[in-house]
Length: 157
Image (cartoon, rainbow, N blue to C red; front, side, top):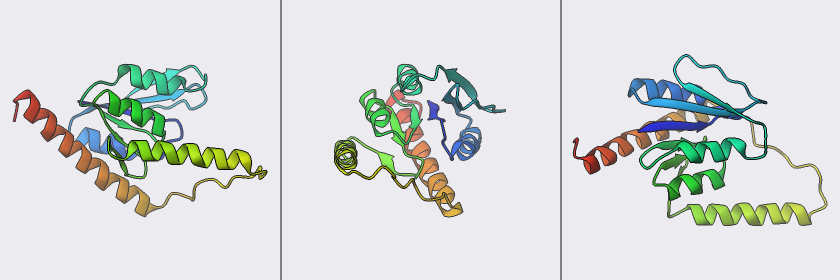
């Protein structure tokens, strides 16, 4: 099992690395040339700044049983399609049961924004310490569940 992080503007990178190190799981941070990252623990892969370049690279290197951290529903859907686990930086797990509805809501919201003549779209609220705690708990729970599931399937547990 490996952890892959869509690290462009991801506020949870430090938490991911702490938990990855705690469980001795290798982590890879992917970013484009606009967001150069450095890490003492994770491998960092920098890709060109093209639209969705990070997303495509992440999906091309993740495999069944890996864990993907991304705020992009499309990346999550592709990761789930490969048999990987996926989690949002808020701590919400993407699953085969909820991803279709999330993609549909994203589509409808985008359509509503386009039809509205408002040019100013309010960004997400400022991340709080509670958000970090919630993500850490949810991420660690996902890691433990994935480790036990993957271990059981390979016969190592």
